[in-house]
Length: 165
Image (cartoon, rainbow, N blue to C red; front, side):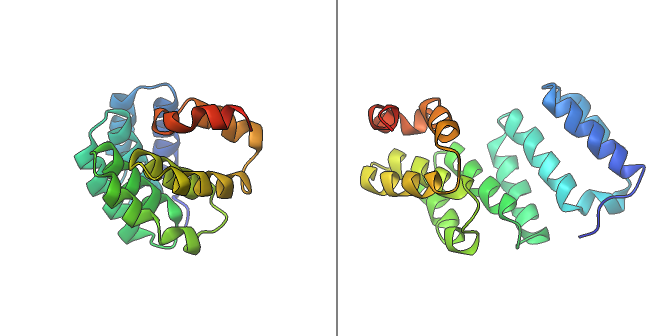
């Protein structure tokens, strides 16, 4: 998909800035300024998802992630967003089912095995969670992944092991 042209690209950039500042209301206002044709762009849909996620509106986030998957099925972002929203809705088994086949489709995207580790851990599948974390370690800096994992309550059952890496 082609990049957005000005002025839409400026509004999207401003929305990202507001999101970084934690101001979802202003981010949404910037997206509302986009021309109608620009609103279907995957980058805009992803920004809408980020607003929903920041506001913890997970049902809407799930619907928006579905739009992103439809608009850009060859991009891992929509699949990751969709599974994450399902997990936040306490539909973790569904989240894993959505994301599991994407591990083979996007083998270099570290967030996929990381999230699969989180889902497996929450489902009580600790051996599976360990395998996914090992996979994530092959794709991401060890210290960075360790820091992330030790701050993730989904992985709490494995924190002692993760500290020992």
